[in-house]
Length: 179
Image (tube, rainbow, N blue to C red; front, side, top):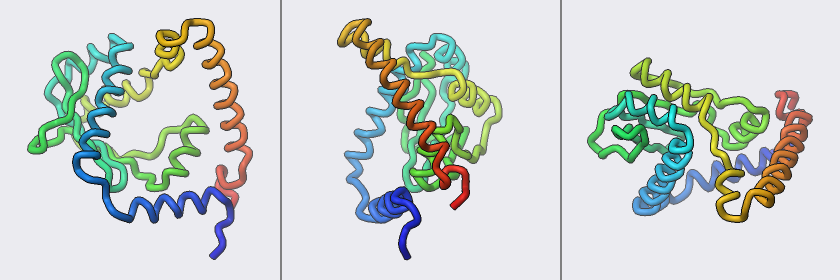
């Protein structure tokens, strides 16, 4: 069978790679730690987010996509940390879409992927608020390294590129289900 688009080929390639040998546990653990550091960095830029999460201190959320998962626990400071292996999740969040290509296309259109949620409703509402209201200010972080003017120029160029990619993805027949 010949793929209809090069993107379907890439999706199939991802399936074959994901189904192959699994990464060593130490690597998974290290990637998860880096993800926690990044999440906390973003949360610390938004004091209201930390306040809201602080009210959920001790709660545990398990996030899963395909065979990849991460279990996070809310700290009293309103940040997150990896939960102990024995922790029972108060909330389970599973990304229903299995195709990374479909997730990327949805993101480029400004849409959220379909997710399945099971557990504490109030905790789920707070997580949803975070998803809707907290954004990484890349330009601000870049300004700390290269200065305000160059960071603004890079940020403006990145926004133009992102808009062009969105337009391209929206114009493709496969992004509208026409294939």
